[in-house]
View: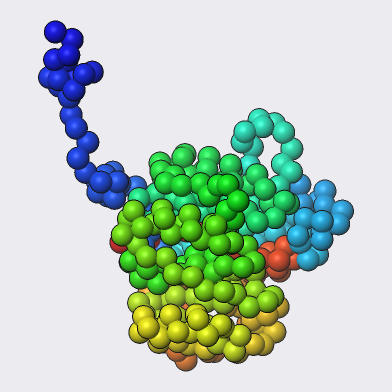
Length: 318
């Protein structure tokens, strides 16, 4: 008799027939399959007083001391710029899971590195350095609070950082390997996205470039900013094969030191960029891009990151 009840796939049993992407679409969950479609939600993590505890910036992968008051001001300005563009700003908590324990992670502000969101949920990173090991759990907690499923956490000997992966189109992700993402991390990412019908291509990165995000930016369908002077031939070949038009960015101090190409696309051809980069701004405007805001990032630069590094992409129009 019991075998006829729903607990045993009998009367009342409701089979789950839709795939994950369909279920998330029905639920209105945050999804991503591009770098340029209208940005709907981001995840930020504003540093706190723990920044004042850093005695040796190099020991925590920073370039110089970060002023806690100044960096909080930068984050307020960044959040305001996003909201002005109609983007919802979510905040990553840093008090999990240790309750009142003092934060001891000094790079959580670079949220882009911690995950890649997709149409079926997020791939959580496995950070390449011992200094950043353990940051992943903060991202996983934040994603779960936002009802974003985690489809994979990179494991084993795999290393993967989210800023190494960019959507070229709805069915193609390009992944940079070498500095922060290794061959095993790439394989795990490719296996996971293959289940969604997404192909993951690989490119090496030149020396001195932390992530693919520091070399390439997608600002519209088939339109990219590229540090063409140092981009590997493999990367240029992929963009050519995918019929991209490339806007070359020169190797100036604005690019190398000010991270002026570390921009966030908020809608097709609409961007947020760092302040203090007049040459790049002129280049962007000439190329037909609209600069929605220029944001001061001096303290983010002290931490060896930029505007895009600080922006976790939660949701875009699909």
